[in-house]
Image (cartoon, rainbow, N blue to C red; front, side):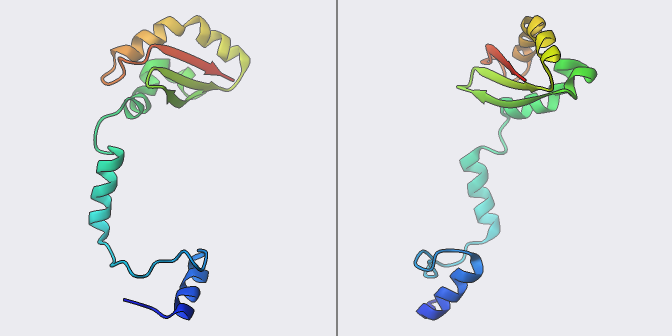
Length: 120
């Protein structure tokens, strides 16, 4: 459906878009179709190291430590960056780094993680 310039401007203002950037010449897309495209593009249905780590976090670190440290990201597919609440916890995790990495590498889809960076 084609709108007048005044209507386009009104729609752009309502949506918080720049007036010259709105494109109303496209046909609407069904939400189901868009979700399928997003799932494929971002591999949302496929298992990933991030998903596995979040699901197994308590198993890796134990109940006491898991609540005080959090995964930040996986850098270059090989380095897990973990944030901790304080320097004492950071030192403890540095001491246990090798055993933590072994647990992580035994998990499905996490075998490529070879380094653990702990930030406080």
